[in-house]
Image 1: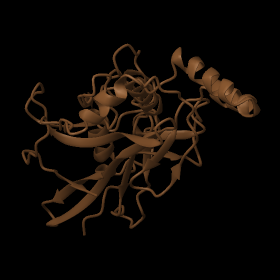
Image 2: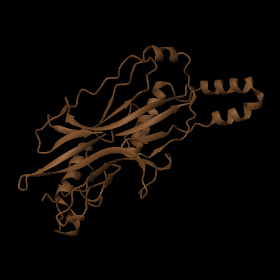
Image 3: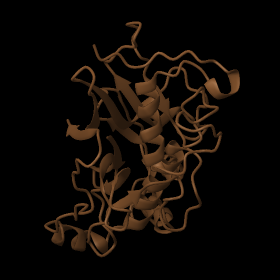
Image 4: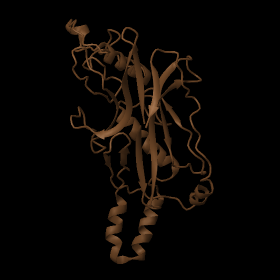
Length: 121
Length: 180
């Protein structure tokens, strides 16, 4: 059972959906395989069928801990801070924010101004 | 939603520990929708009653007696270990008694029995609902169940308490719905 978060665009009268779920799997590209649990990891998974404004598929995001920040694990999306998320709620909200605004890099440290926001047309 | 299955070899039963992401207004919260997780299990306490669902908002929301987790994987493992211990399914001093009695009853199988019962690897069959992948490995916990088995069966009618803290809210621009 997953949560579906609907995002509505007033300008386009269109709705896009981001799906959030908590699940356990063996992650093929795991950053850190636990030594005591056979490689099985539990994580939050964000997914959307929406595309960016350049019609590129938005990637699935995986969060294994509250210090996994949305912008390349270095910064939170909504605020220029490298602090870990304080709770599950702030993490989920920030990752959805990141999907909607389409950050493409750690923009706060790189100075990159390019964004690939969610496409509603 | 992650559903972890814990196999108890003594009574040949699977117990589940579920971790469900939810959104709603918490009674003790600020009145706005928040995301949180609820941890529930089908295991019973020693007295046969159900465990109260646990509310998880941060990695510090761990079972009683555990220190804060660093990852969600560690958090899940802590809850599984806690439920197994608190329900009496885990290995205890009585496990050596049960293994020795087994070996004495049949000398031909004593070596294999003692070797298998000596392992105390943690339980770990797990499966996820959204993805079809599932893994299972054997658990070798020996129960100390003789006194609590009757209470367990007698209290099986007790329904688990559901989290009453969640409720839907449409106060924000995004709406949330659950799908299976």
